[in-house]
Length: 220
Image 1 (cartoon, one colour):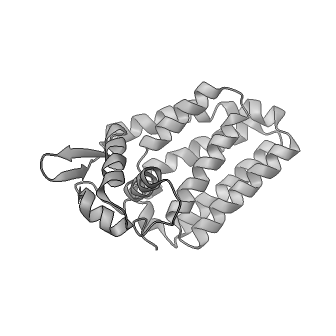
Image 2 (tube, helix red, strand yellow):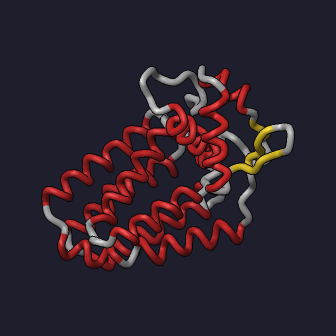
Image 3 (cartoon, one colour):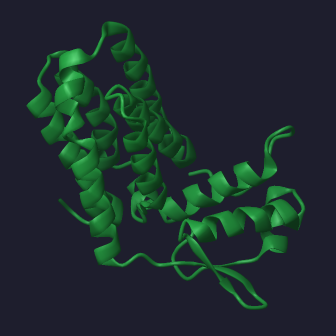
């Protein structure tokens, strides 16, 4: 598996790219809770100055991913079982029920676009590209939820997803569970195109629940 932390391409937004890379490393478990991070050391690994790294770390601190350590840098925070359960339960309550309405109204053009996004998730899983997997997964789910027509709902879910940890994801590389989870995006599209709103709701509810199971290093 390729590390999320390495030299950046020219012309990219440094702070934003560093934040996304560090967030992916923390979410997937590559950077474990308790890991101490320093801006100069990370800057050297990214091939940038310490300034955009420090700005990215401050943004991650606002998301609860790291906490400042006086005169040392930032430490990756832990997430309690209760915190994770609350985030997952909220996501299930917010994301799953709209599938019934979306199943009734989804158009072929939107379905085709979502199928293409689902393909990217499957491809990222096949080549063990966790950063691309997380980006493609978020793009699919938020784009799907946009079809419900409630922008505030989408922003609430976006925020919850940004706070979700999947610390067992890095250990899922090459497993049947990762392949099955990736394939569930196409299964969800099958149910939506079949106008099976109840089935789509149930599948998405189970899919989000993987955060407490497979993605947390547990059997389901």
